[in-house]
Image (cartoon, rainbow, N blue to C red; front, side):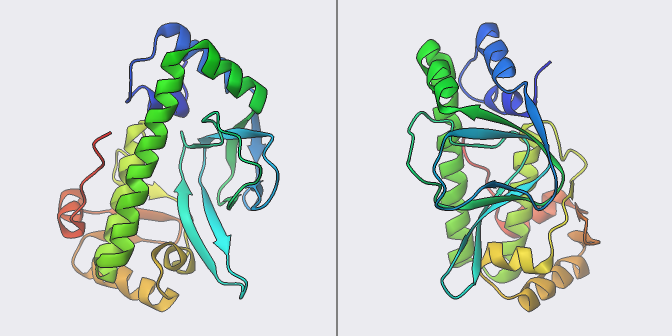
Length: 232
């Protein structure tokens, strides 16, 4: 039975049945992660990577003045540290924002997978290219769009990534993001995040109750956000 990680990679270069089985076995030993638990800490030495199989997390960096920038949101199927290039230290912190299940994989096991199968190596590099494409789009979104469009684009991106692994089909995201979390993702204040949500609700594009974000008209939300998913 495939998991979210394998389903995501199946959207990229072809994976043989043997490759799929190797990936399933490599991610079969999972750990239950409580909300608020750190999966990685900025500055810690890497001794492997992880795959998020259920739940949500986000990656953030802290400034010396204590301000926080959330640089990425992790959804099921996402991973860190699996690309065969072992950096010494983590360059951001990853924290679970819901209860999660994750598989932790040692550097040695990652090296073995990459050496054993060019197909797995291609799939992981495809995943990295896809992440790079989302990052480029996110930087453009934060730097150039008005705040309501910025928020709409973020919701469209999260839904697109969830739908890649067979989730989010109803147009809803059950994720307990606060206005402050969203503000730290978008480079705005929590007051501006609250106002943007209010505007999107008023024009019938979103509903939000603190634990679930619902795109009430997904096609119109995409048009409003000028959302164009990456070509991967």
